[in-house]
Structure formats: structure tokens, C-alpha cells
Length: 110
Image (cartoon, rainbow, N blue to C red; front, side, top):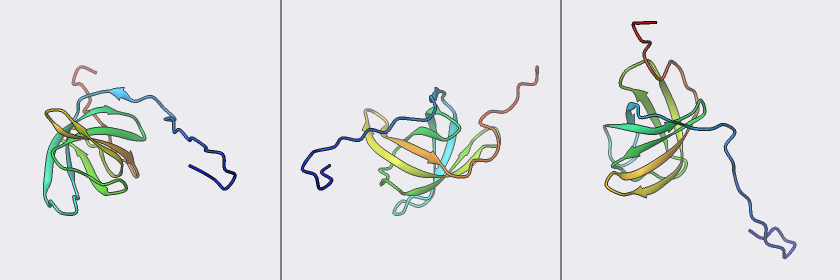
């Protein structure tokens, strides 16, 4: 990216927190051209984001609803990237905008 000085600048973005590898069953909905709810799973999660697998191609900045199959977690989310993933369709990076609830249900042994 050139910023008027003739010198090319490169910007990188790093995460504020580490994602935890965790497969959680989720519903995602809100696709602009393919209505309905897709059942899929996460590859990793954090309090601010998640990476989910999808059969659908999403556009950067699309908004969707993410909800866990078990537990009480739900959030609107913004698509930060969508890249091809072998055998699964697409890997979608999500920024969680208003998360509520818990990712997992509590163990009955606790």
C-alpha cells in the first residue's frame, strides 16, 4: 500500500488473543443469497472470534448469526475472511459482535 510518500508500506494484523482449537457444533444463518440455516462446526474459538467451516462462500463483512447446538452461546458475527478449504468447502473467520451465553454446557460431574 502506498501512502503518498512513494514508499510501500506493509501492514499485518495480529490477534489480541490466542484461538483455542475446539470443535463445537453450530448453526450459522444469514447468507444473502442462500437462505436457511447451515449446521456445521468450529475449528477454533476465542472470546472475540471463531473459525467455522461452511458449504457456502461468504463475503468479507457479511453479517451472520452463530449459535451453538448445545450450550447457550449465540452471537451476530462479521465475516473477516472466507477461504477455500479442502473437502469441506470454505473456512470462514468470524469476529463476534455481541456474544451471549456459554460455548459449552457444564458437565454434570461438576
